[in-house]
Length: 478
Ligand SMILES: [Zn+2]
Image (cartoon, rainbow, N blue to C red; front, side, top):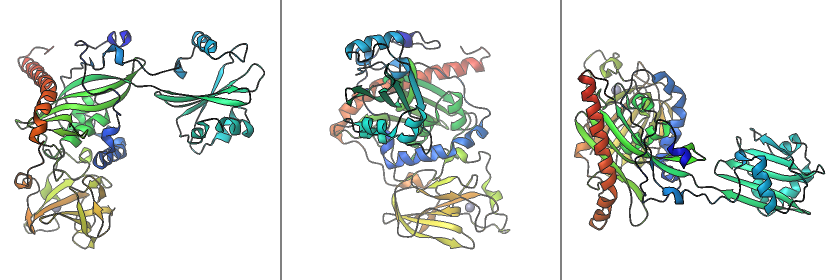
């Protein structure tokens, strides 16, 4: 705790108890299918992001706030973390476990590699299959058979030279220790809870959300989460304009005074061309967690505004350049997204694939029917990932961007049809049915929950505006 507060470049605003439990799984939010797809897609494109580096946002303010209070930050740790083992700590743990060895032997650590199994790892450490057998037959020892690359398995011998202790470290949050007692091994499982802190950031877009986010020091996960939350109201490929601003409050998980992972976004505001969209995390009385705008209307819309991984879309994009094949003014009935071949294309909404095939003009294409009235078309795909008749969920990858058919360069041609009539995908959202709102019974509780983050966003926006005004006035802005 003290360690955290003394961290440089950090301006604590005082401990503020936070209503959400710090035991909430950080990955819980990612479990829904949509988010998982975003996440998978995010991982896929990670490599390409470096290429996007260049100009970006500014005025970042980093302000972690202690969410949990010192007392709740106590871990249910019964043991010293493996990375923190020292002679002193070993000595104290020895007292508790009636020493069968006169003095502690050093630990030997093996990293789990691709294609590893326990026999191989034990052998590398100088132990036998018989040792493997004995350890794994301990209570809970079978779990040791499920090992993954990147985990570590550490060994300690007794003074007599035989295997005394094995430790399987799955992460900084969980490890199991198998300690020899006479003829069998005792199992101790240690699970720790990270401390959850609140962070905030502000960004001003100079070219893309992604670059602004990176400049603000946001992780890939937080940026993708942000894009996912606003994915129904903002087309991150085509909507953002220079000068758009973003304010957000999010969580960070810390372990032993070090950042362990990014958590969920608590609240965010995006001002696009002067219009501000806000989103707040809210867990309703049934325990369902979702994002809502300030009035309690769900951020999750029936359709994504941009049905592809926006991080790969070229920013200086001129759709008219893409159809020189048709020398006459061919009516363009959709939106074109220029993006590299292989960029994931998502189902814009839940529905059923009514056609997936190939024609000369369309190339590889997918048509999806959504309910009675709506249909979306995806043309020129490099690969199709779905077949006719398949059900899809919003955010499912249905194919990848390509240049098949009448396309001169890799791009997604996206069409939106209402009752069989082509509509402009960029503006059709305004005439779609409204997203679900929280019922009246939830609203008072919702309003209480979002009151504080609403203030935080407002104050971040003020700070950002002041900084920007100061910069325009010629001063440093700090
Ligand atoms: Zn087109």
